[in-house]
Length: 149
Image 1 (tube, rainbow, N blue to C red):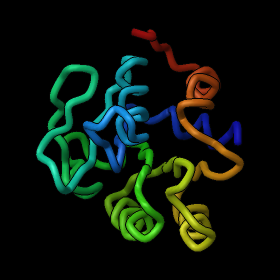
Image 2: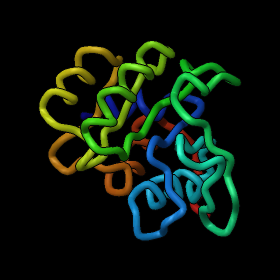
Image 3: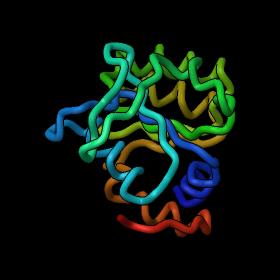
Image 4: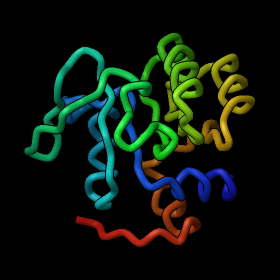
């Protein structure tokens, strides 16, 4: 997992699929984690033009293919969606050139996990792996400087 964490956190930017304005949801907590670590992150939510996280509105994009400036290949993608949605999302992320994905707990089944591992330079998932738990270790492995707000 160390190699995958290093690749994931070596990306210059991050995107969170399933970002939510609801503080009780993991889509909120994961996106807030990136903000609290001063990491450039873009929320992905096709149902809302923005999400309100940490008392600030953040414009969303509807899908990985909409990560265009900079291009999607500059992003690592955290996924917090149901498995049926995740598979389609990963197919689009692969097509857009996203190099690394982190499938948060509950976002994948065996089929989705196999697809992710076969199609991305790095795919983190399983054994309870969550950016909220393992993210700071990933930042350390990537030798990425960060500041916690």
